[in-house]
Length: 109
Length: 122
Image 1 (cartoon, each protein chain N blue to C red):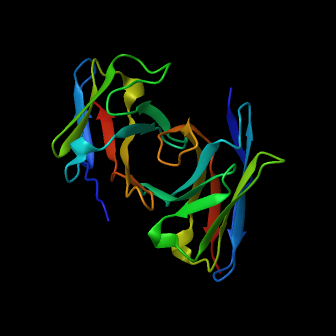
Image 2 (image 1 turned 45 degrees about the vertical axis):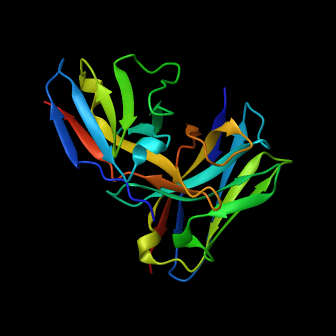
């Protein structure tokens, strides 16, 4: 089965840039989606199709995907960005399997 | 605005089954996939399976094959997830989530339910 690997944690000072990676075999050939989950809440979509932002998501959130790594970038980090972040792809066109990354806790210092 | 409202918390005995509901409003229920995603305490997200009501077919994660059944009732715009042979490791918050694209299960999730805590304990 397909595996997505994320760093367990990323720490960043307010106003700086946070980069969260999502590693998978040839992930650049797949569409990657990113979700933000704050404590005690349901996940929220922040990036879809590698780099598209849903309405209402700040431009500070951006995404890229190439080779074996997809990256979620949060610019000008704010205290309110502290959350868990998950990448997600679909595996197997004949029997679709949803796959989530292991998750990254972003801590704002 | 689409809303997904799930049924309330459940406490179950090991070996029993649980059925969680997810009622959709504000959109076209039948044409969009509803997936179920669970999250054990302190753990990550895990996709369990999904259904597109208009097709009546479900896809399941290989891990849960034979133990999970996902159904949908178009007349009430409600999806259901039933998990059988419960064990303590099934203690988790169970979310329903809607696929953003019409008529495909392989889409990103644009709307989520509030989550249902299922506790499995003797």
